[in-house]
Amino acid sequence: MKPILLAMTCSMSVFGLLAAPAARAESSAVYLCTDAQGHKEYKNTGITKGCKKVDLPAITTIPAPRKAAASAARSSEKAASEGGAFPKLDGANQKARDSDRRQILQDELRSETQKLEALKKEFNNGQPERRGNEANYAKYQERVAQMKEDINRIQQNVDALKRELANLK
Image 1 (cartoon, rainbow, N blue to C red):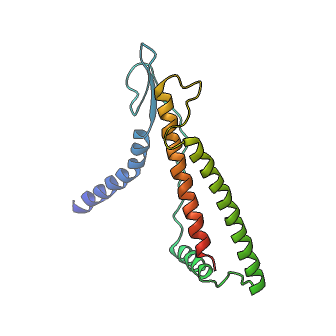
Image 2 (image 1 turned 180 degrees about the horizontal axis):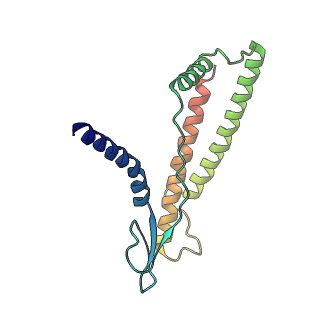
Image 3 (image 1 turned 30 degrees about the horizontal axis):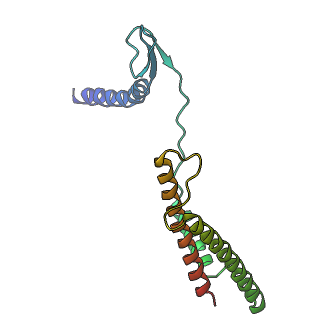
């Protein structure tokens, strides 16, 4: 008796394993249900009236990269950051690049300084002239607040450019 019981138990467990994916696939079905008012609702069961099964595409999975490939990529990035694959410049070319960089920073500093001076002049120590479209005092206050923010932002840009110029060799 025991061998028959064992065979039945094994066959039932195999059947259960084979039936489980089918049940799981059926439970992942999606139904579009429309009620009497025309409201649409998605459900996982289609037992109510007005439900139609929606055919969805299969789920695509992408396997994770292997650890060996990820560690090789990290080691090549590390070698490049340490200068292993980075090209070296001779002294004359590096000085020319540094000179160009200094000139660009000085031009930006000059431009930002001019913007700052013009904005401060227009700001008039917190009392800029009212414009014709600013009959509402709230609009005037909003423009003054925006001017303050612009002055602070441009001042921070000027300070950052000065620091960058000071850090050059």
